[in-house]
Amino acid sequence: MNHENPTGAAAAPATDPPIAYLERIRDYYLALGYGAPYEWAHFEEVPFQPLRLPLEESTVAIITTAAPYQPDKGDQGPGAPYNGSAKFFSVYSGSSAEDPDLRISHIGYDRDHTSAKDINTWFPLRALREAAAQGRIGRLAPRFHGAPTNRSHRVTQEIDCPELLARCRADGVDAALLVAN
Picture 1 (tube, rainbow, N blue to C red):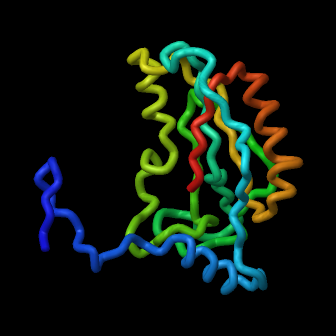
Picture 2: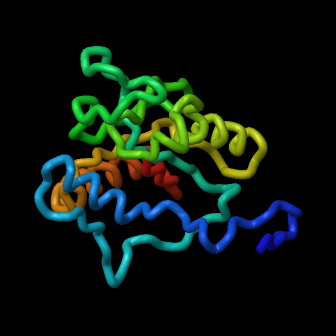
């Protein structure tokens, strides 16, 4: 059966399910030797809140899990196999005025169906610069920030998140775009 959507493109048949992301990630972490299946953090209440200013008046920052390129850590280029040695373990910041050399080889993404060739698909700094220039956001924060993927809820909550919040507050950030690669 071929269902049409309003754009005229054919919808996928019911026998073509989406990628079983959660199951694949659990299997992946088990294969890495972590012992217990990965558990995602979940909360009854979340610390997010509505914007206090309209978006066109807000200062926006990017928080990413992409890693700064480390030449001594092996292949990190587009299409590189998983490279755990390229991970980072502390919050970092970089200038939003420059195009950084960030990579995602340390992340478990679907390398069969995507590539990391275009940084703009997984780190939208240029798009935010354009949004600021067009007045769609008030301004881009002077820095972007990197959030480690430590696989530890405790470290993320007790160390990394307070540090990220402090850096965003220091930059006068009203809204953060979380880009988990």
